[in-house]
Image 1: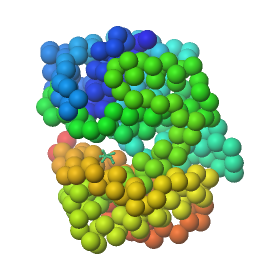
Image 2 (image 1 turned 90 degrees about the vertical axis):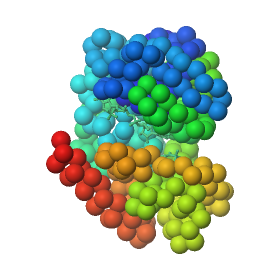
Image 3 (image 1 turned 135 degrees about the vertical axis):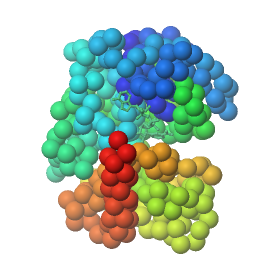
Image 4 (image 1 turned 45 degrees about the vertical axis):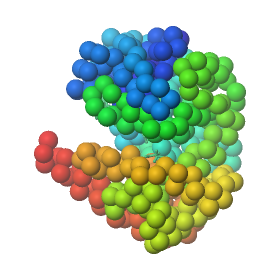
Length: 329
Ligand SMILES: NC(=O)C1=CN([C@@H]2O[C@H](COP(=O)(O)OP(=O)(O)OC[C@H]3O[C@@H](n4cnc5c(N)ncnc54)[C@H](OP(=O)(O)O)[C@@H]3O)[C@@H](O)[C@H]2O)C=CC1
Ligand SMILES: CC(C)(CO)C(=O)C(=O)O
C-alpha cells in the first residue's frame, strides 16, 4: 500500500510514522524546518504507549511522490481549498482521500439520503472550491480521537488516544476502507470502519464547537474551562444547541451532554488545537467547527443564539490573527 501524507504535521506525521512502522510505503509531504528535521532524522514519536522513530520518505514536492493508493490529509481544513495543485500529482483512478479534520467535512451531504442531499455548506466549501480540489467520490471520512502536538521539528508528542474512525459517505463497508483500516491497525492504531460516521462527527464536534473557540477567547485549558462555573454553563448551552442542529439535519448524536462534558474534562490541562494555533499566530480553524453549524442552523431554522454570539467574537479574533499575519508576512 502506497500512502502520501499531505500536511505531515502533528496528526499526519504521527499516522505516517505508524503506517510506515507496519510496512506501508509512506511519503510525508511537509515544509520548513519540520521537513528538514524529518528528512535528517526521521519522525520521532514520544508517547505514553512507548517512544519510537520511523524513517518514511519526506519531501515538499508531490511530483516526487507520484500517484498513491491513499492521500491522508493532515492539513488544517482552512488550507483544503488551495490544496488542488498539491493533490493532483498524487491521484490515480481509485486514490482515496482521507481527511483528518475536526468539524463538518465538505462531503457531509454527499450521498446522504434526505432533503439536503448534495447541499454545499459555504463556510466549509466556499463556492465549491474544496470539492474542486478534493473530489467527492474520493472522500473517505475520518474522525480523530487522538491528541498530538509538534513538540520540536521532527518530534511528535502523542498525548492520548489512538482511535481514527473512518467511513464512507454512503455508509458502505468498502474494500478501500477495510484495507486502510488494516494498515492502521497493523501500525498500532485503532481504525474502526463506521456505517454512520456522521454520528461520530457530531459527537466529536459537540466538544470542539464549545472548547475550541472558548479556549482561544480565554486562553484557558479544557480543564480550566470546565472548572469555571460560567464557562462550564456556556459549554453545556453550546452543546445543547449543537445537538438541536444535528437532529435537524437528520443525525442524533445519542450521547448525554453530561457524558460528553465528562469526556472532554478528562483531557485535563490540554490546550485545544485552536488555542495552539492562536499562540503560534496561525489562522483559526473555526469555519468547519463553528461557522458551519451556524450556517446549518440558518438552513434548518434552528435557534442557536449562543453559537451565534460566540461565532461573532471568535470570527473577529480570527480576522485579527489573519491581519497580523498579513502585516508580518
Ligand atoms: N493535533 C491534534 O491533536 C488533532 C488534530 N485534528 C485535526 O487534524 C488536522 C491537522 O491538525 P494538526 O496535525 O494538529 O495540524 P498541524 O498544523 O500540526 O499540521 C499541518 C501541517 O501541514 C503543513 N502544511 C500546510 N500547508 C502545507 C503545504 N502547502 N505544503 C506542505 N506542508 C504544508 C503545516 O506546515 P506549517 O506549520 O509550516 O504551516 C503543518 O506541518 C486538523 O484539521 C485538526 O483539526 C483533530 C483532532 C486532534
Ligand atoms: C481537544 C481535542 C484534542 C479533542 O477535543 C481536539 O480535537 C482539538 O484540540 O482540536
